[in-house]
Amino acid sequence: FLSVFVIEASMLLNVLLILLPLAIGYLIPLSSARLIKLVNQSLGKMVYLILFLMGLGLAYVENLGSNLAVIFKVAGVMLTAITLCNLLALWWLDKRTPPTHEASDAKMPGKLHLLWESLQLCFVVLGGVLLGLLVDLRALPIDKWSEWALMLLLFLIGVQMRNSGMRLRQILLNPWGMKIAATVILSSWLGSLLAAQLLGMPFAHGLAMSSSFGWYSLSGILVADKLGPVLGSAAFINDLGRELIAILIIPVLMRRHPSAAIGYGGATALDFTLPVIQKSGGIQVVPVAIVSGFILSLLGPILILGFLAI
Image (cartoon, rainbow, N blue to C red; front, side):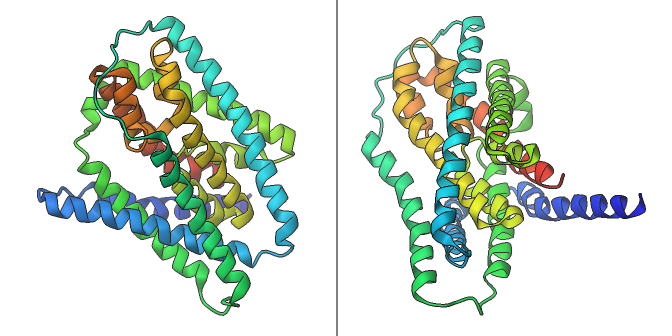
């Protein structure tokens, strides 16, 4: 009993230590627009660095060829199950919350441009894999570099969230956004449990992989840190696929199924898919999308680390 308690306490401590940079970053207000811009730019660069290191680690996995089949199998099953559960649950929510928005005339970034930005992240991971296959860098402390880069990334995310203009009080004042976020969380968990059952995977691992809600850089990094680069890559592809699908279906669903259009993008409704949401649904749905995306972004790392600690 004592040994089990010590193990659980150690896992909890690890979770708290990883979340500490996020909490510290959230406590730092920035009044300078220049500093906020610098944080946003640094955050983007850190994402590329960590994904490159993840690809480098993936290159040194034994039997890489057979593991690629595992990666795409896990990601495909997980993405299919979560997508079906998300869309069905959000469709049900739309039946209870009739749309009250109008289309917007604002200019929206082209879909090909958005898709290209997402695919660039895949190329960064592939670049790491190729370098690792061509040059033996296993003597370097890649795992330690990834860990420190992750800490810095979480710190910058905390700073960005604090200075995004959203406050916890504002979240509580938008019940529609909260309903969407809750629906996405519960339906994502249901989909991940179905996928875990099909894949023969521990339920806790499936729940962890689904709790990033489209935040591909975070899921890939955290899952790879705890479960290895194979499942980390599967988590990354699962969430990246979610974003790509969201870009395509938001304009189609927005008029009759706004909750589904806003909610399926998950955490990306706060940033990447927000222009598509604003163009398709008008300015009225922007606060809803921001609240939903903010809640999912805030809970994502906490839930992932919590499930990985089980």
